[in-house]
Image (tube, rainbow, N blue to C red; front, side, top):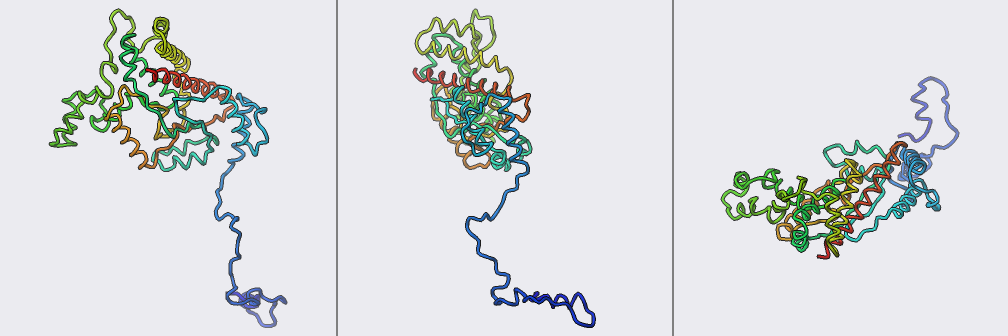
Length: 379
């Protein structure tokens, strides 16, 4: 080790005569041996690690600025912001308040997330989702719990009003789920069962399912019999509801009632049944307005553990078993989250206004789903 400059000089300049030597004492040479190269004591407030984020703050500030200029966010709603993100949060919260997102039966909370937070949740996946995270800011619907609604008491009353009313409720909820966020319906439960026991064939016959079930359960006849399609489907999604027969005298072949038909039923029905028909009619109209656009689901799949709501025809042991299996698997895995989807805020000036129109339409749909579930729950 070097205890002074003279040793170094003698090596570099091996010539006769006097050598240059500093008049100052060597710092190592003037101290005790155990003090040489000792690291100083640092305060606990000094960070021990850092995160390098290239252009993150600048990208975020530019995106926020574009949304204030081209979107419905109002600077008047911002008070003493600590930065661009805080300003956006205040203005976006005020915008949500104007369009209305408070619900009683649909469970979700809008959350704003920076890119780094989303990366941490999706980088463990094998499909390279993190490479698609181009926006510095994301909207997600946090779903930390869900309510379960049964149609057991509504079903017989609906049958008296119209043979397709129950099918229409489930069909419309499925369509809203596709455009907004996960709503578990009988179709979800049937798919879950078929993927594990019937090789994804929801319409499998007993004969087709027997081959697969025997491979799984061998000589366990009891386990095989209770997993046959003829036994399972009536408990989850009966064929007369899933694929109802054509109603005599009705021209349309759709299993879903048309807006006109729902309006007629609303006028004839009374009480909560009229409210059900009204909300179904409104949701049909909003779905027609949305077309094929994904209003609250156009982004990276959050692989959610929970849903906005669960709607079943009858709450039975098989339904409970499927839900328990889902939750147990999700909590043991590492890819599921409490978010439905990570929606990137647009970084294109031309697309920002349309994005807010889609978001507003999506939240409006969920408001009407909330009212529909409230009406269904009164039966």
